[in-house]
Structures are given as structure tokens and as C-alpha cells.
Amino acid sequence: MIENIRLSFQGIFSHKLRSFLTMLGIIIGIAAIIAIVSTIKGTNDEIKNSLVGAGSNVVAVNLTQGGMEISSNDGVDVSKVPIIDDDMLSEIKDIPTVMDAAIYHKTMAYEGINHGNNMLTGAYIYGCNNDYIRLENYRIHKGRLFTEEDFTNFNKVVILDSVTAYSLFEGEEPINKTIEISGEPFVVVGIVDKDEEYEPIINSVEDWETYYGEESSNMIILPDSIWPLIYSYDQPYQVIVKATSTEDMADAGKKTQEYLNQFISNSNSRPSMGDSEDEEGEEEEVVKYKSEDILQKARELQELKNSTSTQLIWIASISLLVGGIGVMNIMLVSVTERTKEIGLKKAIGARKGVILGQFLTEASVLTSLGGILGVLTGIGLAYFISHVADVPVAISVPAIMVSVIFSMVIGIIFGLIPSIKAANLNPIDALRYE
Image (cartoon, rainbow, N blue to C red; front, side, top):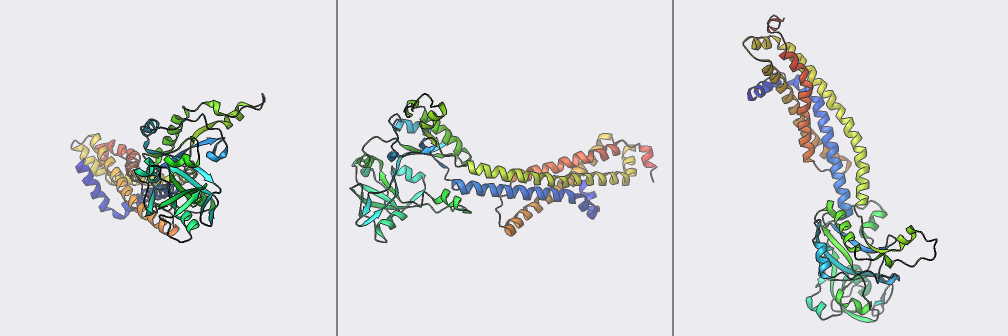
């Protein structure tokens, strides 16, 4: 085998131009496929990162009715929804695709928030612990997070985001200042901002609303132990789970919602107004947990790009077929040129298998070398397209490996006929060939 490979390289380098022209179809085909696949992968990674936050992998599992998220001030009966305790939270964390989880309260307050004469109209109020803040990638900008004493002593303290702090204090230092929520005084102990490690790609108003719509709204965070002071009844928790990977987000959210919904009785739906109420209408009134499918839009965009790009890959593969035909042609020429050499080898006892192996090896080495050059050309082409067209690129290692192996297979397939012809030559006729 090693001797065959050595002879193959010797034959290739003794006819450099002919060998290069033979490999050109393979090089172009492999280069085109590598460039297309790398661009697809880069674009898909960008779509995924834009929608899920580049590795945060956090998905919310919220209470919904009729597919719409509900909160404490929506007037929906949630008496049949159980309070999530530590054991239930532990069970959620034990789900294979869940790395971590946190529970929280959330509602929209349209009024009743002020600092002196400054009133805040419309703010998301969260009741949570530091686990929620950590999983949502909020970092402390000023002040501190909640302490254990804040929870055990039911301290009236709050953490604001920068938007809320500016709205209420108008540039004044907010730490240790007091704000009122529904007439109750709360001391501001911290200011948080979303971790700026990742910046999503914004191409439309819809993208802005998806990524920043809620985060840019006024946000006030209370210790969950003090939550009943404002909302004096047991309000069910919402849940966020951190998946083990981006690909596991949908599964982690679905498994969490299935686990929580088994504790909810369907009797929490509103009473039927009459016999004409159909099952679908009743189902829409049921309160249940539902995970946000944040990857759905990513999948749709990726499928659209993949379907288009698959056609391009098939078109590029045509050049591989042309390259394979070129390999077959040059190998037939090689067999004709080396007819006397083949006859001499057979005359001194070389078997058909040896002759067949030599020519198959030469064809495989020729196409493999073309495949490697095609990979290098494809990588360069991918980065060139990325620079010129301003599109992301991510080199796919599996695509490189498949391309090189595929080029070897092409050499074997298209080199088979010339190799069989060489192996079947009559040694006497071969020696007399002119």
C-alpha cells in the first residue's frame, strides 16, 4: 500500500499540469460545498444566538390562560394552582436537560409607584430571590443584592433596573433612598443591569421587541418573602429553567411544564355558560403552565435557509460528478500510456489484485489531494464571502471530514473501471502494444 501511494505521488508530480486540471473539478466542488456549509452554519449560529442570548440557555415557564401569560392583577382564578415548594423545585432541577431553576412572582403595576413627586406608570414587579437574578444574567451595577436577612426579617428593600432608577430619581443617587409601592415604603439597596456580554443582532422592530421590549421596561425586584405585603394572597410562582445546552432549551421547558401541570386540576377553568360551550372553548379557559418556545423562530429561519442552501449544495455537487468523470478519463489515459509497464508486471507474476490496487490507489490519492486542496480553498472562500458580503461564517469540521472522505470515494468509484481494464490486460498483448 505504501509503495502504491509513493508511486501515485510520483505519477502525479511527473504530470503536474495534467494532474491539477484533473483535480480542478474536485477542488471546485469541495470548495463550493465547504463555503456554502460554513456560511449556513455561521448564519444559523447567529440566528440561534440572537434569539436565545448566546449561551444563557434560560427559558421561562409561565402561567397562561388561552395561550396568554397571566399575572396577579388579571383577575384570573388561580386557586387550583399549587404553590411550588422546595421539593417541587428540586424535582425540576433533577430533569436531565435542566441545569438549574428558580421561581419568582411577576405582575404589572400600572400605578402606585413613586418617589416624592415622581410617579411611575407601568412597571414589572418581580418577587424573587438572588437565584432568579443570577440565572437571568443581571449584574449588580450599584449597591448590593438581597441578603439572607432581607428574606428572614421581611425587610422592605428593592432592587431597580437602570431605567426605573432614572425614571424615579432623575439622576439622583438612588441607593438607600425610599420609594413607595402601593403606599408601602421600600429602601433601594441595588441597581442591576443586564449582562452586556452578549449583544443580539437587531434587524427589525420585531427583533427589538423580542430582545429588549421587556428588559427596557421599568423593573422592580422585591424579596419574595415580602411579596404578600403588597399582594396579600398566595399567588402561584412562575419558573425559569437553565437548560444544559441551547439545543436542550425546548426539551427543558416542555418537561418542566409537564411536571408542573400534573399538579393542576382542569377544574380551574371558568364555568361553562351553557351546553353550547364546546371542549375547545373550555380548554382555552384552562390555567396551565406553558414554556416559551424561544427556539421556534430560530428553527423556522434555519429551516428556510437550509432548504435554500441544500439546493445550492446539490448544484455544487454537480462539479464533483464532472471531476469524477475527469478522473476516470485521465486514469484511462494513464492505463493506455502504461500498457507496456502493466504487461511487464504481469509477465513477471504480478496478480490482477496488485494491478487493480495500484490504479485504485492512484485514483484515490489524486482525488484525496484534490479534496484537501478543495477544503483549503473552501475555507478561504468562506472567509472571503464573509468579508465581502458581511455574513457570519463558522467552519464545519464534520463537513471537512466528509468532503475529504467523499473525494476518496469518488476516486475509488471513478477509478474502478480504468483499474479493472488495467488488471484484465493480456500480458502478451500489453508487451506488444505500440
